[in-house]
Length: 261
View 1: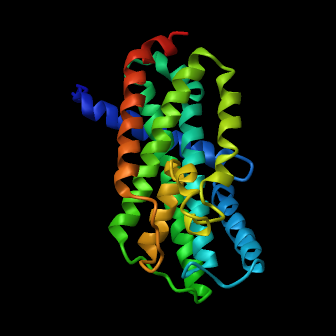
View 2: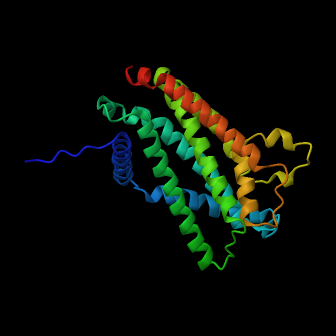
View 3: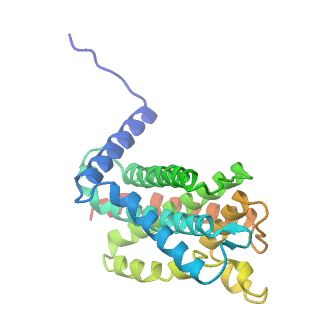
């Protein structure tokens, strides 16, 4: 006689997320370049931008080696953009699966985001290995603060992605608007520069950006000698909690309507 396993709601939710996560991995390997492109893309940018910045003068930027300075900038902007975009696209990508009662959009959001975060962690490990081979000092003076900045930015990316996913479920053209809005972030989020490169009068026009806040805090967490005045964990945390609340509110109100369209 077959044994019927009874699972509670949490176990069902966990299994659904895991299944969707495995699906994300298989999709990644089925792409033309596979997961290698997700790793090689940020690495190539880091090397190219480090070389360009070094040509502008000096081997260090505000006490941080140029390679490390660019690494944190590229890592965090890529973390935000890819996590947000994959989360926003996961609703449409998995819509056929929502016919099953156990599969809900929130599971797809979390699976897609988890995959992107893990890819970025792999990138970090590879970069640290390359730094060791290149005899570049690996420093993380404040590891807990570095982890906090990484995961706070991840939550921001997921929250923004959820909001865009829900809106795009009703108005498809919003996807084009999303792409237009995210392109300038590459140049306004402190990837190539630091707040310290500008006078304090300019800071309020730049420091509102939570991505810039996270990047500067990450650099300061890695090198305590790096002055990261003008940014704070309190601001980053406030933005994170606010965006998460908005995302969950929008999701709670709209998810049943959006999957029925």
